[in-house]
Image (tube, rainbow, N blue to C red; front, top):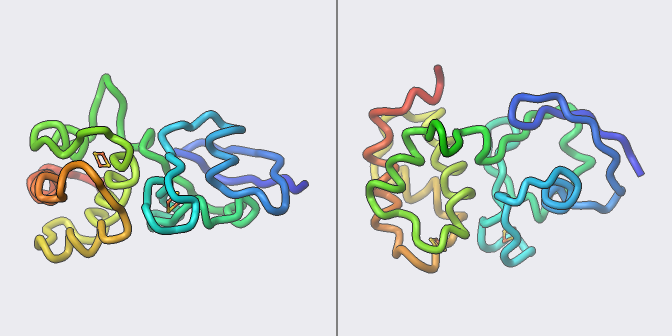
Length: 157
Ligand code: FES
Ligand code: FES
């Protein structure tokens, strides 16, 4: 068991974790963040994506003990039902959500892209979400949503 001290969605968080515990398990089972989804558990689907220091990582492959001292963001950082982030608004507007299982990870991958590139091309967008699988939408609506949100986002402000 190890005590970790990290920032989660802007808040200092201290947690006891097992040496072999994944960040996915710690977030879902100890911190009740169910938006981080378990899909394949082997680094193939992206449903478990979180941002660590604003870069996407598969939380199923990340040891919780490794995030001590780092900044972790889940989709809760972006917005909630009272105030959606422009990316979340665009996902709704452009029909980029069906079952929703991939959506938190997709939004985080997109957010990370827009932090670095306010005006991405479709190629940039496709590359940024290439680690996130969606079995429902066929990706066209997701790319469209991210492209249209890009001009509206103030991700860096
Ligand atoms: S659950 Fe982590 S990549 Fe699929
Ligand atoms: S909306 Fe169902 S997996 Fe993407």
